[in-house]
Amino acid sequence: MSDPKLLAPVIQSVTDRAQTLYALPAVQAALADIKRDEKLTLSDQIAITEVEAPPFHEKNRGLNMMERFKALGLTEVSMDPEGNVIAVRRGAGDGPVLVLAAHQDTVFPAGTDVKVREENGVLHAPGISDDARGLAVILQVLRTLQEEKIQTVGDIYFVCTVGEEGNGDLRGSKYLFHKSGLPIDGFISIDGVDIHRVLSAATGSKRYRVHFDGPGGHSWKNFGTPSAIHAMGRAIAKISEVQPCGDPRTTFTCGTISGGTTVNSIAAHCEMELDMRSAGAAELDEIEAQILPLIEAACREENARWGAEGEAVVKLRLEPIGHRPGGQQADTTSVLQASRAAMAVLGIELKKYDVASTDHNIAINCGVPATTLGGGGAEGNNHNIQEWYDPTDGYLGPQLALMAALLLTGVQGVTEPVLEKRARGQA
Ligand SMILES: [Zn+2]
Image (cartoon, rainbow, N blue to C red; front, side, top):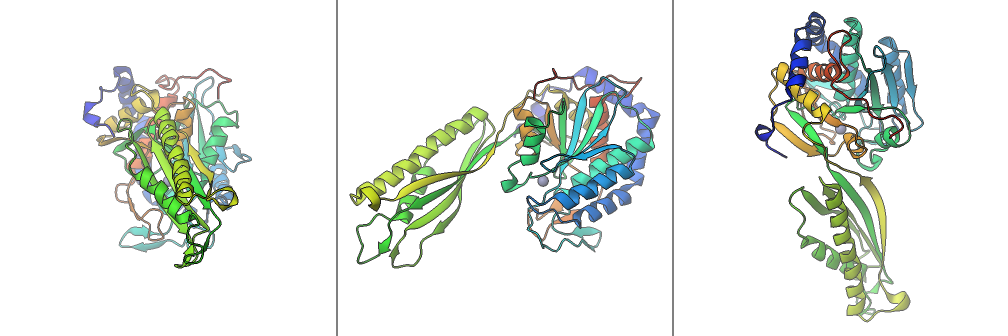
C-alpha cells in the first residue's frame, strides 16, 4: 500500500470536469435522489442477499438481477455463457465503454440460511455485504441515471460477474475480458464497503494443491520406507525459509495440510495447499520458480534418506487450483484519476491507495484501466455466516460510483469523457 499523501495531485483537467459535473443541477438532483433512496437501495440489497448464489451456482441470482435491470428500463439485458449478467445503458454515441461491476457469487454453499435479520439497524446474513452491497449500489446508480434522464456520452455496461470468490478463480471476469469480445475501455468493481479506499493495482496469485504419495506401511515393521508426511514436512521447512521480494510485495503460505491414516502408520498420502501472491507479475513468476523446485528437492531428499528407489519412493503431483494474474498501472490512469476526483468533490478523503485481488485483476492484466471502490457503510465477518452490514452513511457509496462513472463516460453537452477509447479488436 502506498501513502495517499505522497501521490501527485489529480490532473487539473479531471478536477475541472469533476467540479463542472458537481455543479450541474441534474447531478445535484441525482446525488439527492441517492440519499433519499437509501432505504430502497437497502431493500434491494436484502432481497438480493436472500437469493442464494453459491460458488458455481449463481444462476438464480443472475436471473433476478436481469429482471431488476429490465424493471429500471434497460432493454439490452443478457446473460453470457459463463453466467455474467450484462445490462447496457447506451450513451449518446461513439463514446468509451465503462463497465460498472459487482460480483454475484458468495462463498457460502447451497442450503446456507440467507434470511436477513435486522438488529439495531445492523443487517445480518451471509453475503449481506460481500457483494450484495455492490449489486445494490450499481442498481441504485442506474435508477438515478434513469430518473434524472442523464445522458452520458459513453456507454455504461452494468455487469454482475460470477466466480469472483476463491475457487471461482475470477472465471466471470476472465470470460468478460478474454472471450466476450465486448469493447471495454474501463472497469470499476464495487466490492467491499470502504469509500476511503481506491485499489490501484492487482495482487496476482498462483495456487497449488500438492499431493505426496508413497508406499506407506507399518511404523515398526516397515520402518525405512519413505513417508509422504515427512517429505511434505521437509518441503514446508524449505518453503518457510524463502525470502520473498518486498517491493512489489510478494507473499506465500502453505494454507492447509491433510493426510496420514493412523499414528502407527508411515503415511502413504498427504497434501497441502500452497498460495503465492505478488503485486508484480514478474515477481509472482519468480516466487513460483523459487518454491516449486524446493518441493521437488524435499521429496528427493526424503527418498534419498532411506535409499528408496523404483516403486518404493514418495512421488509428487502438483495440481494447479488457481491463477489470478496481477498487474500494476500508472497513478495517472484515467479510472484512478476519476475515482480520486469524484471523492474530492464529494468531500470523501482518500485514506488507502491499495493493492488487492478482485475482478479488476483481469482488466488490469489486459491493460484496461480499472479499480475497485467501496459500496458505502460498514461491514464485518465477511466469508463467515456471522457476516453483518451497517448502513450508516451508506449512500456515499452509490454517490461515489455515480460521480466516477459520469466523469469517465462524460455527460452529453457538458463534459468530455475522461475515459479514452481503446483501439478496438484488442482484448
Ligand atoms: Zn467480494
